[in-house]
Image 1: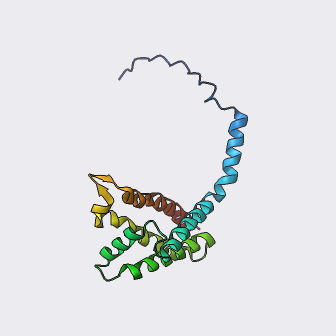
Image 2 (image 1 turned 45 degrees about the horizontal axis):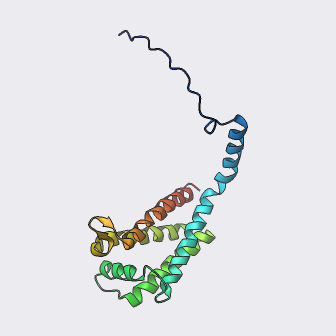
Length: 166
């Protein structure tokens, strides 16, 4: 089959703001080479700090903005077997332990397993508490608070992938 000869398009010249000199490219690659080996550790510690912070807040009554949602979700998830006065300190302690493990790097694999189990419980609140999480198909403030955990799940996946390749 004969293809007609198409003219070669003229090279486009990029605007000055988009052009990269080889020296700048070299510096960028050098910086990336310096930061990349530490990026997962920084991500792991950052998630750990967030978990510690939110976990400690749940241990103290009326300190966590997510207290009511967490208690309601835990109560629904356990079929009412765990009352709020038990579930909140338990959740807070678990989050704090996960956070400490992520910050220190100690017992990281069990902590990651607990992390994903906890995240599964947190995200199920989107289904268990539809009246709290959604308003006409749009997430409420509480729903947005829960949905932000998708970023933590993505970070947890990156940390887990790094850990499993060691």
